[in-house]
Each structure stands twice: as structure tokens, then as C-alpha cells.
Amino acid sequence: MVGGVTVISVEVTPEPHRPARPALAAVPAAVPAAVPAVVPAAPSATTTATALKHAQRLVVLGDSTAVGLGDPLPKRGGWRGVGPLVAAALGVGPGGYLNPAFTGARMRCVLTEQVPAAVAHRPDVALLVAGMNDTLRPDFDAARIAADLTEVIHRLRAVNTTVVPVRFHDHSKVFRLPPSLKRALSARVADLNAAIDEVVAREGVPCLDLDRLPGAYDLTVWSVDRLHPSELGHRLLADGFTALLAEAGFAVPEPVSLTCGGGVEPSAAGHVGWLVLKGIPWLWRRGREFLPYAAVIMWNSFRAR
Image (cartoon, rainbow, N blue to C red; front, side, top):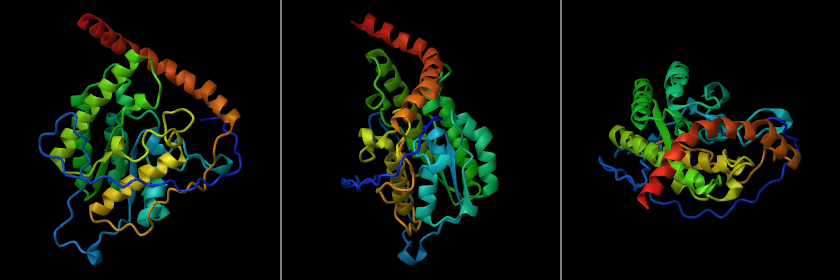
């Protein structure tokens, strides 16, 4: 979360004004659906500056956002994204970094295809960005997602890993949709977040709330497809993750900068190429799967009038 990208010269974006980060409060055992859940791991009462944990190994799990889509490297060098930015902030070297994420991954994919490699890596920290692809599929099942997320946390916790998942923003505010589709997507995301909230509260893990992330709905933090973060968006994600990890007692020797640099910005030709080769086919595939659910939303709305 792109073929045909033309590399242009890197423009360094001035660091934007950072609004004060909202206080991160623990979520109670029962979380109302309307209450955002950002749960920092509670550091030990004896934790001091000299007792900070230093992460040596980091793994990034999930979908195309976890892969780094939206933050291309020069000379068609692939994607950077949130993972390498967090690794640099934590001081994790190349040998300690692992990213088995892949585009289109759902929560079940993370559990069955990515977690085994992650467990073998024995990371100190695991970042998890998954669930949005589930909302677009006809077999969406919030209870199953919650069960899979719980198992992901348990398997990684067994090797002493701090797992940090995300709960999602209302993507219909970024990706413009017809009203019926907007209601359908918003309802799915609400169900997904409720499932994530339940697991986060029960397991007591940190969780990054994308809805409360500063600038989450600014268009500058989104790439041309409006589906994946831009370089600035990935930097904001990395900044949010490292803030939670600092709350959990990890050292962050090199805080994430919000000044863009090191990547490339797609050209106008690259934008068109992505839309034709990737964007429209993706929308067609997912739209055919999602439309039946949206039709039910439309029918229920009509009957309620």
C-alpha cells in the first residue's frame, strides 16, 4: 500500500508543524465501539533511563503498507516505508531487520505465512499492519480476525516479542467513494476496529491508532493511489510506532524525522501508469467482491426510511 514510476529529483519537504501528541491512555477491559484504543505497554515501575531495553531485532508483518508501498527508493530500488525508518530509529542493524510482509495480505496470511519466519527471527519488536484487506472481502469475519490476531500475539510473545498492531482510520475520508460504498466501508472498518480493540485490551499490548495519528487525513501523507501512505505518511507511522515503543521502555536513540529525504516522488507519468496498470484493475477486482455487501447497506438504508 507500482510499476511505471519515473524517478525525478528528490525534493526535501520541510518538517511540518507537529501538533501535540494526544495522551495515550490504557483501554479498559470493555471498550465501547466509539472509543479509540491506543494502548501503550505499561513500563515497569522500576524502569529508569539506565534500564531501557535496546531492540536488536525487528520484524514488520502485514500487507502492502508494511511492505512500504508509497515510499519508493531511487533507481527502482524497491520500497522503503515504515519498517526501515523504525529500524533506524531503534538502532537495529540490517542483520536484525526482517520484513516478510506482502501485498494483499490478510490477518490469516500474517498468522499462517509470516509469523513462522518472524518467530524464527526471534525479534524484540514486531510491528503489525493488517486487516484492511479483510474489510474488502466477501468473507469478512471480525471474530475470526480477532482470533487470528490473538494467536499472532501469543506466538510472538512466546519468544519475548513486543507486538504493536494498529487500529484503522476511516479510509473513506481519504479515498472518495459514493455514499453507499462509504457507509459500507466505514461499517466494516468499525467492526474491524472493535475486534482489534477487544484483543488489545485483553492482551495488554501497545496499539497505534491511525485515526488519532496527527495529519492522518491530510492528502500530503497519502500517495497518488490514496490507498498507501506517501513518504511523509510512512514517517508519521514510524514516529507513532516509536513513540509507543518508548512508552513500553525501549530506547529510541535516533527519533524519526518528518523531513522527507532519501526517497523519490512519482512523476505525473508515473501516476497515470500506476492508475492504468495497477489502480483500476485492483479497484475492479475488489469492487466486484465488495459491492454485494454495499448493496445490502443500501437496501437496509432504503427500508429504514
